Image 1 (cartoon, one colour):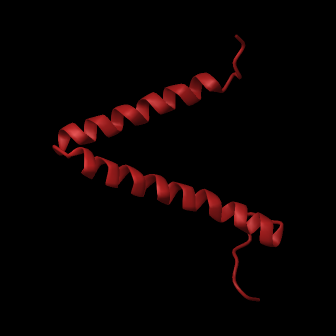
Image 2: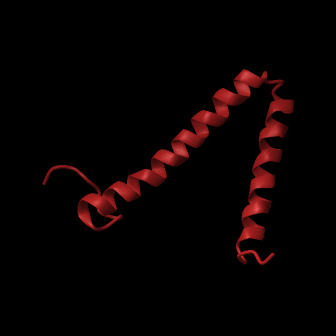
Image 3: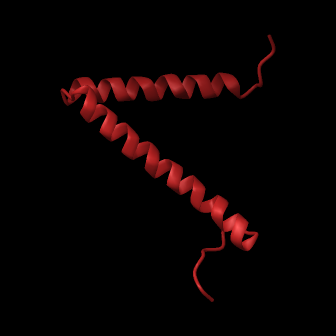
Length: 70
């Protein structure tokens, strides 16, 4: 099966992220619920940041133009 050239990088990044989460859990002796809280908050922040540029594109046609009333 042929995969996209970037897929290998994406899989490597996913593995690195999984390892970082696992390492943090061990380092700080986190419970599964604490780990879940941290992971969901971090991913929510990332998703919000990505969405911000999509919303700018939709509203202003330019992802680099901040919103607000003019």
